[in-house]
Length: 418
Image (cartoon, rainbow, N blue to C red; front, side, top):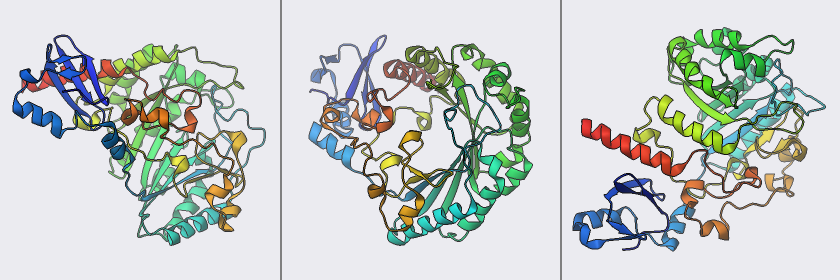
């Protein structure tokens, strides 16, 4: 019985782990049950064989590809708004350092965005959600614009509307919390340890921003205890702050008496910034794997499993009608779209021109090509994306086999304890 090519075979200490990437089903077998991807049938009971068949451990390529290509209608319209290209911080690794001209989105442009949304809804009755990503610069510098946007969107009361606010946190005060109190809001803030943060993300006068952000977060308990509101903290990793993460997590758990999530990320080096991270991807991957298990509240729960299968769902850039509107009204496909590739204006969309026509020069990269069809990791990766550049097959930032070995080992220990 030959295993499907989409089943990952992982040697462990005294066993072999079979991980079906098609459906995230995991089976652990004793050594000797498998030889060169063939299961020894005589060692398995009829019930075990039936279980493996029922869970697609022998699925053929054609059937697997049909599953990959089965997608559900996209019911969410994603709108990215760069409200301002100004910021009150001067971060050493900022991705907008090279902007020579900076703009602020005016209320007339908000009106046009809302008009665009109305036209999309008129032509697509399946959309039942609208999700805004409010970015900058520092979006909370434009408090009045956000207030105006929320007021304008109130007309779509039959839809679920949510907001992601990507803020540096210095202005996330009581006034902002009151404004967002009745909205479905996720707040995304970058924060590291005090010493590192104040060096890497200072105010424009050089003073530290850490204490202001932490004060705002401590004061936000009532806001984040509301189930409509979520906090994500981003820890940007470089060589000099890797060893500070444990103390950072201890501080957060002590200071923040409400639910929050922490995500880590490697800093991207941009040619136009003087400061450069010296952290290598393989160093980060090893560090990240250790911290997944050390600092996640419940790393072994099914709901927190990190290798869920993907299907052929277009990335946000290629989803119909999804758009990024810059502060000057120019357009991009998503946040990964380089600044030099801005094109057109939201007026073109209102004049009847389609997104495809506006971006006729866009990178034509299908997430599923002949190379992907041959790849056993297709369901883990999800296919190619233009934003990956030359690293199309680097789709995860930790060692998969090591993750699965520890996950299975610890899960087994938990069940034995029960």
